Length: 208
Ligand SMILES: Cc1cc2nc3c(=O)[nH]c(=O)nc-3n(C[C@H](O)[C@H](O)[C@H](O)COP(=O)(O)O)c2cc1C
Image (tube, rainbow, N blue to C red; front, side, top):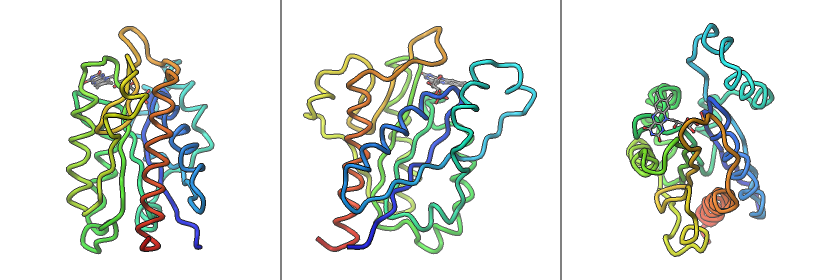
């Protein structure tokens, strides 16, 4: 059976979404014949801002070996996991900017029928992680993607007191912090979503 490619496309300013992306990759790796492709979207932050912020500099260092995504990465994937920080209950401008360049892919129908899951990190539990996932779905639905969520009877989702939504995986950092390690449930839910998208992509690709 041919290997399928699952693109993990994300942006992360402080490293939280990046931590999630690594767990998503682990989940994809659990699926036979699925190959994860970790890619970050281009940054829009001015160098002058990055230079002054130790927490951003640390996250830049963590991600220095992650390649920047190309349109061909997206065009050629068999499934997508998309990660973005929650910004005012929506995706970040870096991700919006990348997606706004996908017009040619939309015309080609390059993403039609491919499965996609979403993950996000927010400062607060009620700061809009759900709305970020749902708002992000709109663009992916326009592309004809098949949205994959987390069934709400998933044990870690029933147990978590921090991140995790039926609409996508999430992580809560907490007020006053820029970065927090993922909880065990948050990690498990990231892996679950990565695995689920990859399993569905394998079935769709091979008509099984
Ligand atoms: C402009 C801006 C808007 C934000 N809006 C929200 C928000 O609506 N709700 C929330 O809980 N956190 C909000 N945050 C916090 C980020 O979602 C949070 O820091 C996130 O964990 C960052 O992920 P990252 O470390 O991967 O960049 C916002 C941060 C910025 C800079």
